[in-house]
Length: 243
Image (tube, rainbow, N blue to C red; front, side):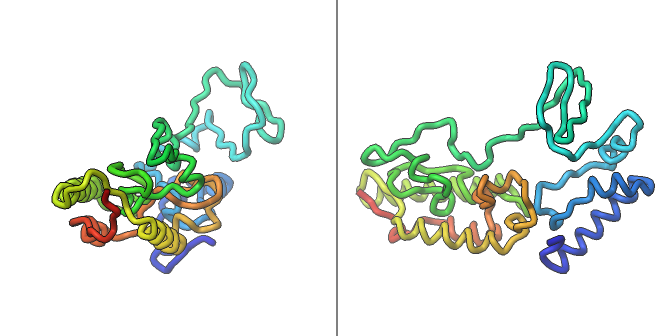
């Protein structure tokens, strides 16, 4: 699938025209660099054409085959072709879907957060998690933005919601709060249903840091900024268990 909508197809055509304009008619190179998945399905490279022009240099070769192994002075690709090398630059990225990976978080009754999550990291509104009272996430699962907008704005919404939760807890004279499990489950299901309709989750995208090893998107928000703002203006008492 090369497009998910008419607008997405127009974006693909625009990007393709830009790419081919920088390649001076090199069809072989164009076949290597023009994606076969919908436009914006992965994080989009933004530059002034210098990357594409670099690929055309005589001392540059773009190899799309995978790496079989690395030797002391060379890289050997999946076809057994050996490429002598003095320096290797690793573009290993970062662990987008391993939320709180450097922390051991323990909830009520010794509940381990990462074991509870398994392959389904989630938080109600991206902020609170049942079984983990008084634990609030900033930039949690389902709050990353890939379609425009500001993470600073999202963070401000989250911070306002968290302070609202603390105010609610004090007003109720309680010591701890956590979301109702049904709210958490419903939020996760709604997010996944919405994400499956969007470009980042399309099956034609085989490798993307937006997806986990099972091809599921957990990190991104599928919602409009105005909706997230409305939902986080103040906590709803009925959404929480307070102790």
